[in-house]
Length: 157
Image 1 (cartoon, rainbow, N blue to C red):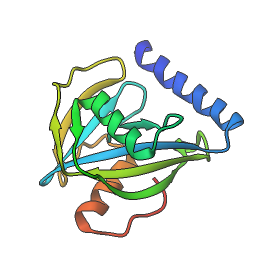
Image 2: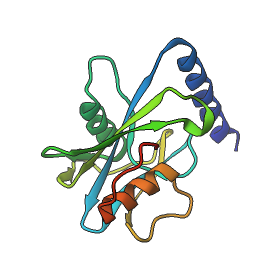
Image 3: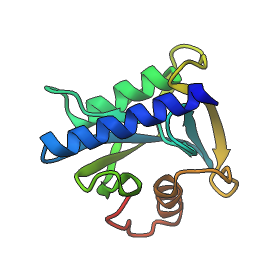
């Protein structure tokens, strides 16, 4: 239990410090879609299933960050040109009001290496878009629904 709390508190402290020193943070997430299936990951420091992704590093585009994070977290290498679905405001459950997420969708990819659970990503799985895990990030759940019903996305993560 304590192992799970430490990364969670570390993330909360990081977001609080970022909020004091930076005007805005940019993250990137990507949904891999294979027919009716979507790829989700479960991180050790954030509750619920969500899309692979993370922060955009200096000198990196949001697309480059999404593709890098996807590869690092899942072993899947994105091919082709993923589509930008939108840029969303993410308040991180009230932790910061300065975070934005660039969200991409990719339908072309291949498994470059097998997934191995680690300290950051404890689980990965493919889910039918109508049978998503109960414990799932609300923003990610909305993005899946919007994609598969061709609904105009909301502006909040």
